[in-house]
Image (cartoon, rainbow, N blue to C red; front, top):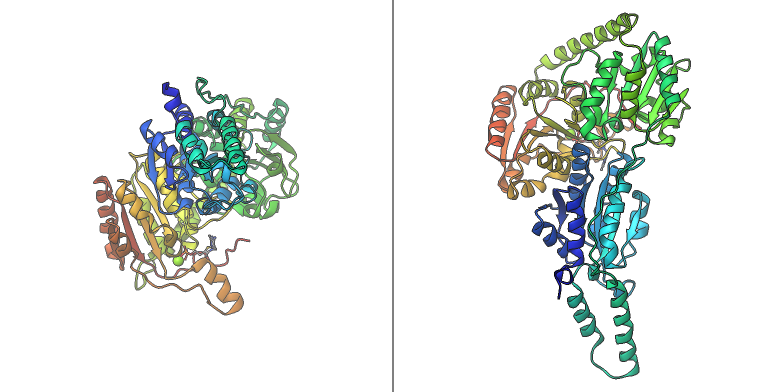
Amino acid sequence: MTDSALRHGGDRIAEALQAHGVQRLFTLCGGHISPILSAAKARGIRVVDVRDEVTAVFAADATARLTGVPGVAAVTAGPGITNTITALKNAQLAQSPVILLGGAAPTALQGRGALQDIDQRPLVEPHVKRFFKMLRVRDLGPTVADAFALARSGVPGPVFIECPVDLLYDEASIRQWYADAAGKGTSIAERALRWYLNRHARRMFAGSLDAVAPSVQTVYLPRANDGATRAAAAALAKAERPLMVIGSQAVVRAEQADIVARAVAKLNMPVYLSGMARGLLGRDHPLQMRHARRQALREADCVLLAGVPCDFRLDYGRHVRRSARLIAANRSTRDAKLNRRPDIAAIGDAGLFIESLAAAAQPSRTPWTGWLELLRARDRAREVEIDQQAAAQGEHVNPLALLRALEAEAGDDAVFVADGGDFVATASYVLHPRGPLTWLDPGAFGTLGVGAGFAMGAALARPDRETWIIFGDGACGWGLAEFDSFVRQGIAVIAVVGNDAGWTQIAREQVKMLHDDVATVLARSAYHEVVAGFGAEGLLVRHADELRPALERARALRRQGKAVLINVWLDKTEFREGSLSM
Ligand SMILES: Cc1ncc(C[n+]2csc(CCOP(=O)(O)OP(=O)(O)O)c2C)c(N)n1
Ligand SMILES: [Mg+2]
């Protein structure tokens, strides 16, 4: 037998992953996928295991966002796959390129009542760019290459590859398995079954010994046409109050984020950053505004939405005044035109469009100085208000004071992962992400429960940096079991739980509208003790004076390789009063 005959389908997948530069494979094991995991490990890909399949896909999503290389997860058939649906949908809406390898029952037994054998296509297909169903071993490697190219091209997103277990083991073992299943009987039916299974195996393994080097496809980068760039540059030249809003899509080419940042600075107009673009301009940049975005949008006479659709976050486009020139740069035609037709639609990569616009636009326009100053003054005034609100002292810890302390204490290289309601929304105003790709939130799907998986992906992609999870106490419930995964695998993250004993973002409106807090009340649970049970470090902060020492201690523990959770008892705050997302 040649070497290649000994190699099994699992290894063909691992070989293709390796060729695409994949360094980590996130998984929760299952009999259907064992060959993929062991082959990946043998090839030096780190196999990272989790306690819920959804975490594996969240971690793959974060990996993709931070590295630009699609993140990869492998999960077992049936319930392994159904558990991933939330994270798949989240990646689809966040336009994150994720490859999900899903197990499946043996090809010869599908539809015959095998373990965990369900029709997976209708469950998964709506949430991915493509559902690849594998039927032949020789297609495994090339399909991985197709999946990588597809995940990254056009509007990026998740791709699913269904890998039946009998394609993953070596031919000799599978033929033996089929022979055992067919028995040695001599009846016509038994002989017919043997003939059938033989033919089936022949087809499955046909051509699988051919030596084919793994291939990597070039991905075409969608670029808006020059006409759109010229028109946008002309609109900007005429504008008196231009404004730019930059979203996640502008940084999908993770390795290019710094170049996009320089182009933004060159355009010299006020900027609001959202989603993964937060931090693009560093901690404090004179062009970046943080507050009163709605008001600024209402006043602007020329608005560039770079990778930002007119969805609920811009009140379906109503935040932009009718008379303003609207420029939408987006890889997705649908997103560029959602709810409101732009005057200039630049269909292509949003970051690339900013680059070409910066090259085409006239440098530095003095008339914008007054406009910039106006917005900066508003930002400063709001910061003063926040300081005042942060100074209010109560029985426990003021959430604004906590976040201000975290802002001061977290390292210059910190990566923040946001998972929660009010507490996290407040954090998005108070924390200043340190640089490009240092802020992760779920995106438009508003998914609670992303925290542990995102942090896992981030901490492994940037092992030299501090990864902080900003958790609501409600949201942390999804992630706590992953402290077991963190501890066992030496993944040192720091979680800060804003413990207000409730699902406050929901309670705030529900109580006001319906005078009923049903299902929104939680306890001041000892989350720090829960993680201590998994071997992580748990710290409790009930009073303001305990805060700074706890943050310092958490950083020191992280440096020793420990995963840490700080459970902070919060006081109520009016900071988010009146905000509602629907
Ligand atoms: C998976 C999921 N379930 C439910 C919700 C609805 N939801 C939005 S915010 C929120 C409350 C979050 O509570 P917590 O994490 O404690 O943050 P807080 O608002 O209390 O600061 C809930 C339940 C959601 N967004 N995602
Ligand atoms: Mg809460």
